[in-house]
Image (cartoon, rainbow, N blue to C red):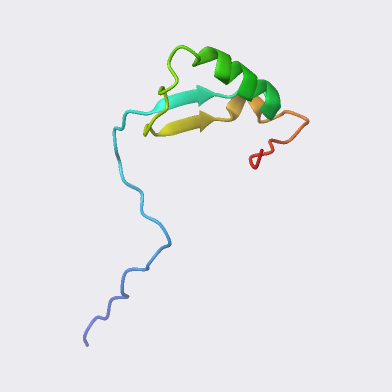
Length: 73
């Protein structure tokens, strides 16, 4: 009797290991206006700081915040 094997399942994504240079932003507030003001002040001396660089936003510190983040803002 011949054995049949199932075709590998297709998924909607792949996971790959990578080491990438990124700028990590540890978000400490859900207030978009406050974040924008603080960020503008922080990078005022280097206006091209984020030019063409990938950014990782760490939301862990605001996970339990009462207010949600308005990403559209």
